[in-house]
Image (cartoon, rainbow, N blue to C red; front, top):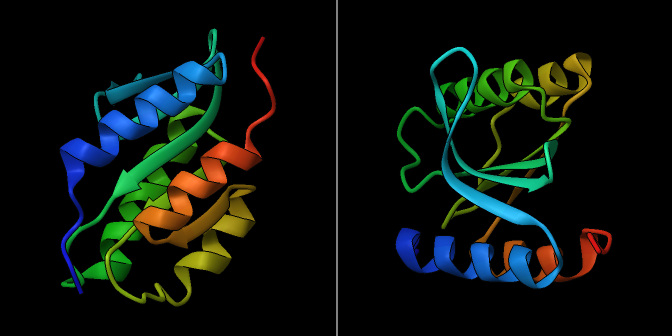
Length: 122
C-alpha cells in the first residue's frame, strides 16, 4: 500500500478536467461550509465530487461524511480515491438511497476513468 500523492493527483485531475473542457476546483467550498477535496464542474453544473482518503482508520465513517457532503452540495456522483482495498459496508447502500453514485477506486483507476467517463465539455 503506497500513500496517495494528494498534490500530484490533484494537479493531474485539474489538468485532465481542463483538457476535457471542464474545471476542477480543489478544496471546493460547499454552501453549508464543508469542503470537497476536488469538484469537477461544467460551468456551474456539478458533475463529480472526488474525495482523497489516505487512511483506512475509521474508513466507513469517513466515507459516510464524504457521501453526506457530496449529497448536500448537490453532486450526483462521488469518487473516493484510496490507496488500499476498501469496503465501507452499508454506506454504499445509503449513498444509493440518497440517489448518489458512489465509486471507490485507486489513483490509477481515477485517472483512467476521468479520461474516459466524462463527456466532452466543449
